[in-house]
Image (cartoon, rainbow, N blue to C red):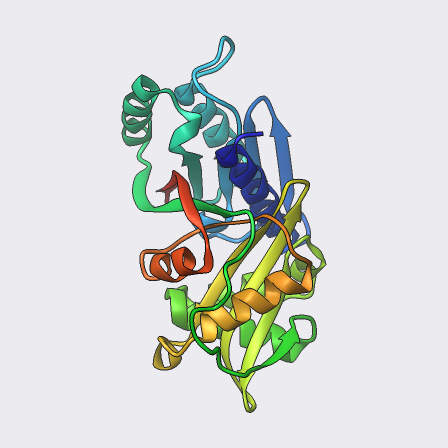
Length: 258
């Protein structure tokens, strides 16, 4: 399996965790498309991920978007399309932009897909935090609050997604880093056959640039053992991940249909 395929397969497992948010959540996975319905009316948590190279003899990008649109229209929720540029042939990338625009999907973000066979040693001494696994109501609420503050997700949406018990029965394992009794940073990991994925690395704004994100990221990864790890990086996090030993191998794009 090529590096970008390892990243993509782990992301598929991570996005599937959102089907645990509410009873009635669903996943469908076949023919090169992974569909996840969370039950939450927020596009980033109802996802269509391209999982096979396009175009193929049987399918092109336009047809996959059409399948996704039909799936989410039946559930009457906003939704998003996620794809790695390496999954699309060069000419198909151009056609993909047209297919997205004609169906009213708007560009939301893009991020490098990164991989590290193993982490480099820290370049500096990391801060000491108290780590607690997300599970009880207090930790679920704290995780929701940090995610909302760091990523500007509306608090009610963040609590709906991360504050319920069922989310943490998914393959996603979440951690909080506390400074004293104050929750200051988060991270989550998702295991797939070929890698461990790092997600939801966030620090409340007034505590950023103090090393807390790196500290909790390393802790969360070490808790599931050493080995190959993957992630999709924000612009702010990119220099940190390079220092930790990650290298970019692909780029992800996300488009939302409101």
